[in-house]
Image (tube, rainbow, N blue to C red; front, top):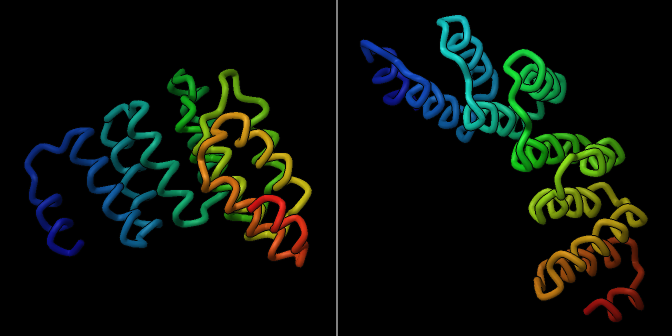
Length: 176
């Protein structure tokens, strides 16, 4: 990241792609604060973020656990830049909320989407249900995933793992 930052800073003209590449690199390498700062600098320099830029910053907020910042950018995308959130934007927000243990909010956000959420968003929430020992919501999410992807063995394994964490061995056996 040190070398990438040096090259980025030496660029005579930075565009949306170079900023987004750098923001994503910072995020993946655990520099959430720097990623957010660079996104704000990009906007202050007059570049207008597009759907991809918002996916990157929402993902960065999720990786870093920046819940309020994530909501801020999600709302800003909609109301300041008039961009409609895609299923991927919602999935980033669900991931962010889920990691923070705010499972009910994540579930409500999925249910409020104007389009059908993709399986990745449901899967992120199912994983968080296991992590945070929420069996009841996990069962609801798993049922939805099994409708969407009945042949995806990973969904059955996740539900089975939720039951195992709760010592519900007969349910583990049934799901397996």
